[in-house]
Length: 336
Image 1 (cartoon, rainbow, N blue to C red):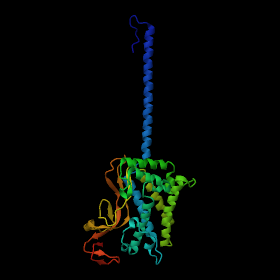
Image 2 (image 1 turned 90 degrees about the vertical axis):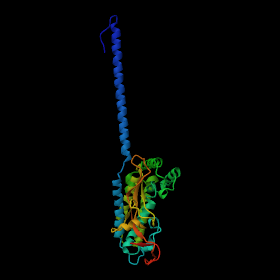
Image 3 (image 1 turned 60 degrees about the vertical axis):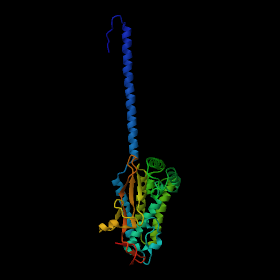
Image 4 (image 1 turned 30 degrees about the horizontal axis):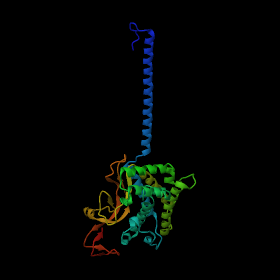
């Protein structure tokens, strides 16, 4: 800035020029401060959104899923059977138990596996059947809308994984969670009146616990209610975490009779040989956990099995079949 007046230039004109330049500098400084403030606000907003996503790693999901499986196994092993009780008669054959031949459950050890598979079947029906199941009956309409908008008929009649379907799911679950709390979903703790969404979640939890408890009471006079409550807590906690991910996380299991698939299944036999790779599924002990897409809500074409389903196999043998009494006769398959 030149403060020296040129020949013939008045002092007032020089002062006016200086003041004009100074105002320009101050204006630019104010504009810079405004832009800096906007940038800071955008950064804070971005950080808030990142924190809200709450991305959970595959390893953490595997850990929590296996923890739930361990609790279910522990309960099934801890129940002493009442003398003369026919366990099969008190457990409905559905989901994991559907199409399983009754002779596969013969013997005390297999009865424990039957209980384990039955408890998982209850959870699959009432907690993991959709991303909204853990909310209870209050959100049945949202579940229906999701499948009507994006179609059904994929795995367990969910919509095919896509950015649009999963984004819609996450936003609706986030909105619903804003009307309740994680403590209510995961622990059943509520200081509110049992109405609306809160009441629906509490009723859903109570119903699941009641179904499991009621059937365990039929089987045995001794059962640990605290173990059952722990299973319910873990299942609901896992369900809400799954539903809030940008990727699709789903509890999965093979069909009875399906060919053994090493990426999606794990055989219950510890001494498997190479021939078991040619086996088929006799029954499912516990389901697995699968994932489509990534943390950004993209790339839904590939399935990745975080935890494989645990299955009991029968080895393919076209020359034999196991009859209802476990005897071998001409037919198709023999359990190993």
